[in-house]
Image (cartoon, rainbow over all chains, first blue to last red; front, side, top):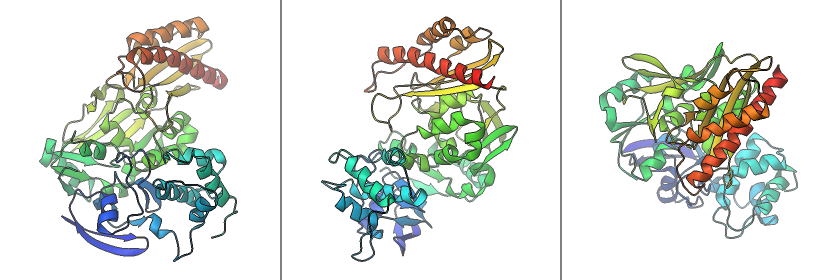
Length: 156
Length: 291
């Protein structure tokens, strides 16, 4: 067992966890933050993307002990009460999701992109989002959603 | 997930002492994108996992340093290398190659040292590093040694690293003046996939004569490899289409690809020839422009 302390969506969290706990399991089972989804479990599909100290990571490949002392942001951390983050609103307004299972990962990856590069080109969006798979949308709507936020077309 | 004890040393010395103490019972965790997958599949079952996170505070392990040779700290992430202005200016081949690795999310976590220790022959960086004559610096409690990258890989997921050794840096020596380089990652499927075949090349020109040619391939055999017969066929020659074509054809005997869903062994061997030729052509074009 290890004692870890981290900030999750701005809140301080302390837990004693088995050494082999994956970050996704800590989030979903330990903290009831079930917005983060597990898809492929091997770091390919991007459904489990969260931000670790602002950087996008696969929470299915991240040991929770290695998040000790870090800030974790999940999909639950984006809205302010009922006020949605512009990316969340854009995915609704522009049809950026259908079944929804990949959406939290899509939005967290998109947030990491816009945090680093607020005005990405379409190529830059496509290149960045390549590691987030979607079986429903055909991707165009996802790219349009992100582009709309980058172009300032979506008010939060 | 298998059970293990996670240990997070505060210093390099402590990490090396732990490796000496636990030997083959221990594995080193850097970005985890390779190792955690192997552990999930129970292909690797270490009793002790030594996490290197705290060592990133040591500048020589986490920075890229220019000084004649270019030294890349083992804990530099792929993303750090890809976005480094120094790498983009001095070794654009490396920036391009690292941009092609998996996805941003994986590149953010995966490290230089981790990727070499992982020794998956399908990875993109090794062919590029091989044509740049990279060396691997490793350290144990007993001292330090440098290994030519071309002598580093032994077999699938196997290197010459001893259980008590840790990769601390990758060193890229100064390149021949005006050298041209290229990297081709042939990917019939999705862009975040491993290559069906990957080829890197470096040539320099003295007038019309090819000097110091280097050709290396990934996803072509049990280890990343230098295509030395191709290099020998180019050395001292004038880069005519016929010379390049005939040299590239020799790669068929150098590779020993594994059939998988990215292609049959025969297909990969054929593609090795095609992309070796293209890699040489592009490197020659660049060297000619630099001339």
